[in-house]
Length: 585
Image (tube, rainbow, N blue to C red; front, side, top):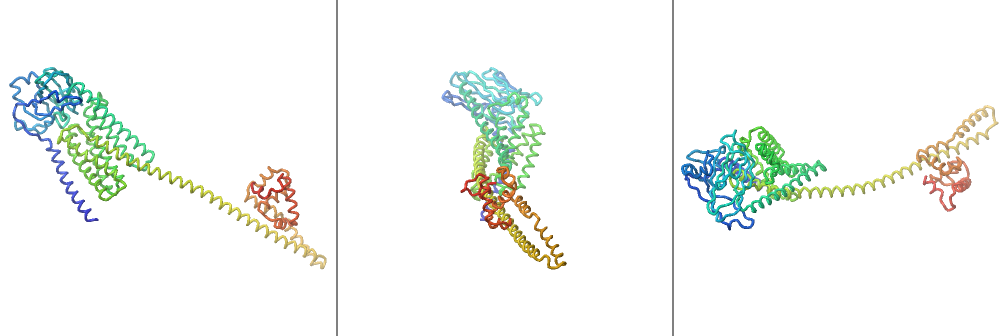
């Protein structure tokens, strides 16, 4: 067993090293595109058949590109100006492209010329989406819209979060789109998402549909966050609920900022760098929560040392995001991503080990981690422009949230059922314990009563002996003067001894064992005499007539008659056992 496990660990270690090198290469060189040096642009052809029912068209293809130039439609039609352009692929960023043997970076400004051939006249819309650009748009020579303010330097440029729908009427044949854009706040310049073209109805319905989907997803994420954090407050020893709730919360923040709903749009437009920092920080915090959650669920797989080191790294990253200008944050994110993705790959490896080691009680957790980490890898490639697409991580996160929520809720329900079962068992135990205590108390009480009875008998026997001595001494009187004097002294002492009210002492001991008995009996039957009350105590002790007679130094018959008179005073029927009645006090 150990040898295959070591081999598997070695394989994964090598895979991690290769993955790390690949990540660095992608981070630095993943966006290198083919270089075009011709000045002619291909026309994107749109046919009416392409725009049917709910379909929209993504504008993809080779378009004209004019670096460090802000051109208008009139400028584009100038033949001398047109020769200064290059052909590039859309969508795509201009980072690291070589124009006339010169490499260009993300900061800068440019103009795109997008010729489109449409075979009909119709009311159309074009949707443009980006995160930190500014643009100015013309369609068929007419100015259509502007978002932010594209300038020739950082001071002039006002970035914006772009998510606009621009209406226009198409011409049959060539339609020309001219768009000026500038970027000075983020690493990537240009448009990273495709423009969407369709009828006005289709584009608006698509926008509404995406907003509804985003709202639905955000609602699920937020509900899961509140639910899991609430479970933590009810069970604060289960930190998995807290980590999962915070993970869902950070995902909610990120998705709300990137979605089509345009939450707090006016505030975001005035604070685009802050908006980007919050979106980046929420993604970093989400990865932190994934690590903490995995550590809490699989402590035997992820060591405390590694999670502490990763936590320290996250704190340093958050400090960098908070303090550094947004451009350097966007550049540094590629290094940060490399480290985070490497850690998440390790989590992915540990998730697979769950199945290898057959930790069956936590398969659902492991599968959830596997799904979210795969979608994270796809998101990494989208962010780094290895592939061009809209962000898709939230779909994987929804699956992850559903899996983890189900697993945690199922575990919580099982724990709750066990608690209920333990409560019932404890309740039953308490009932049995109460019964046992009552039985033991009754046994102790009976033992005390037997002890009292033994003392009474012993005292009675002592009194009888003293009576015999007294009678003997009394008979010996008058036989001699000295003897008479001694005998008189003994008689006086024995008589004094017999005169002590031992019965009162016995009854005082009885009162300690049965507190409030005499008081309750006198309240219930005020006509009883003191002797009858004393007799009641002996009867409660279940003593026989003979035993009571020996204690009181009377005949058993006298005891029986006294009991009969006392029963009549109490108003008890003849068949009623007075002893049972006295036990009720």
